[in-house]
Amino acid sequence: MISIIETVNSAVNGFIWGIPAMACIIGVGLYLSIRSRFIQVRKFGVAMKATIGKVFKKSEAAEGALTPFQAVCTALSATVGTGNIAGVAGAIAIGGPGAVFWMWVSAFLGMCTKFSEVVLAVHYRERNKQGDYVGGAMYYIKNGLGKKWHWLAVLFSLFGVLTVFGTGNATQVNTITAAINSALSSFGLIDESQMKISSLIIGIIIMLLVAGVLLGGIKRIGRVSERLVPFMAILYIVLALGVVILNIQRLPEVIYSIFYGAFHPSAVTGGVVGSFFLSMQKGVSRGIFSNEAGLGTGAIAHACADTDDAVEQGFFGIFEVFADTIIICTLTALVVLCSGVNINYGVDVGAELTIAGFTSTYGSWITIFTAVAMCCFAFSTIIGWGLYGARCVEFIFKEKAIKPFMVLYSMVAIVGATVDLGLVWSISDTCNGLMLIPNLIGVFLLSGTVFKLIKEHK
Image 1 (tube, rainbow, N blue to C red):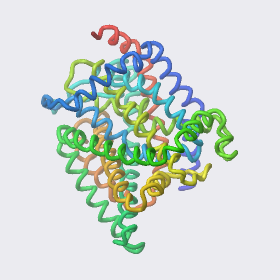
Image 2 (image 1 turned 120 degrees about the vertical axis):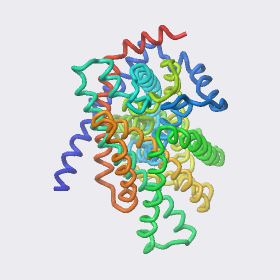
Image 3 (image 1 turned 90 degrees about the vertical axis):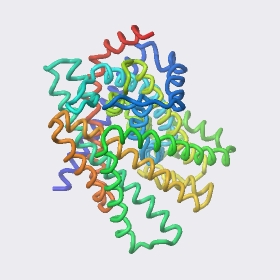
Image 4 (image 1 turned 45 degrees about the horizontal axis):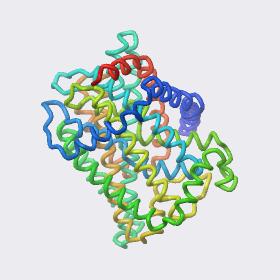
């Protein structure tokens, strides 16, 4: 039975992340960019001023809402996760250094896609019975396209529910467990025989922490996110910049390998990665897995923002993709490539390659800091995706299903900490890709509204 599931999932995954999906992702992003006259370039300065400037301003949101900065932190808490550490390393190993170039391309177009998603989410959102703002792909499909498209909104929500338990929870907890056990082991505090008990204890602690945050409601999610995200981002950026500076002599060669390898991967990988399309596919898919532009998930958090200006909140979407992919993912790639660690091209790897880049530069003592960074990244993703899952469940089953979902979602942490998740990760990746289809259809059909709101914005 398991082998049948693996075969079916592999076939669906190959199609979802194959040529049709690449054409759809890049095509919609390019269309939105051209029609908006490349707003991610024209308004980049405005977007940075409107977003980074909010970091230093203290404000309170109305009941049932988040401040605009809390909204972007909640969205970033979901996007800045293991995809930035493990996903980038895997993209380089399978697609070569050139995959980083295609990650940049997907991020450049993704800024406009995410901007459009956020604009539509704020414009078409509504209030639920508790008075909270609710929005996202399912709501702008329902309220923007009408009843005949309601099935598409339900489809998006269904794929979202299936995705959150794996992508948003179990795989993230697994990463936290591996990072903590690795750090404890490197300092001789536990051995191989004690790791199962350690993993179970970690899973229980995470379950309680997740439940405590999610059951506290949208306000508590926002408060945790606005404190955790800046801390973890600064910690990781400082550590990564240190690796680049200490290996600065390799930087010119690395930059060359990224650009040349994007079009001639075999020349950079010694012939192991010979497919131009494979390099592009891995760069684009892992970039989207990290910044979620096109998935429609981040729009769910932005819809909670206490603002009436949809375009202004859309600028946060541009900032979000820029911070996630152009800054953090790029630094991860430079850590791997500048550190000089051996890359076994053609073999899918994860966070261990990135950690090797840090340890080869700083020494084994850095594992404690990488463990902290990875725990923050993964935990923030669990919280962000918990909100997404709750909104998807609410859309299908109404408000009564939210608390049971949050309890179940929290308990999945124990599974993630103690079970091998190979198939779970693969299925979640497929469901993640399936969310693209209804969302991009909705964004494309409602793009006229986005362009109209841009024109009206002062």
